[in-house]
Length: 395
Image: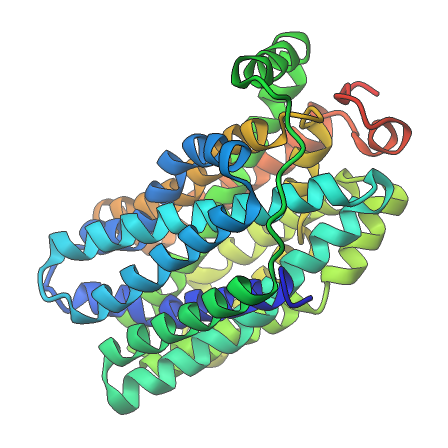
């Protein structure tokens, strides 16, 4: 609890503070939606580019040092963000934030992959994701209120303080644990490449689903505040309340989602998750005020909650034992490409086609992810229960 889950909740809270405030802060620089979306997406870009190197660092330097360095980078970048008055620097600080979050997230997920039995992995990772969601629930409404009372920059300072608190907790309670790896760096990567060679069809389909799924998850965090501010004229507090209410529904489902994954299979949560999110996204253009947008956001939160931890559980099922860090770096790279691409797509489409078309395109991407998981990705639950060796997705 103290070594993994509490720091995760604190960092999720810090990130949640930025959900309503960062898009509005970027728009204050009098830029297009595309440029504002680039600021929002820059953290995902930093995470994407750092994922594979972070996996290598994890295997070489161990969990604790990777966690601490990553958390420190997050804290520093958040404080610098609060002092920034130059748009390119905003992007640089957000890129750094993404690098730190890659190191932090990969170290914690790798620990769970090593320490938890495969038969219980869905619940463990869904709890991990659920606690992140609890932190994210309090973040948006708090960020909106703080921004309206003290200015947008104050939300970034509070986020930095929470990251420092997470750093202190990790420093005290995280053991100096090494990830279970093969001694040779070349051997670890050969295990990963062999897995890719043997199971390339299943892994390709899973990667497409991961990319599309993370794209709509991140895209919703951009389109809701942009739509609320530009079309409905809502305040930061109102936008934060909407996002927090969505997170409340989202976080209430993390335990049922984990149970269903372990009991019935990974696809029993991931397929309906992206389908329901797509329905919610398609309803955004019909929202004509605060309460209707709130209702739409609740539908989207329901969908996201159904898939709590699903894609990361799928990745840990596929990862070869002894090279978890390297494989999960690649898996997160695919997901973070979607995480970065979602806001960028929202900004570009909003400038060129308007918010209605943007919402419908995001919904279509979500349905594509759901269909890919349903028809092209084989269930991994049975294989993960039977063996600790490199799993065969065909199981």
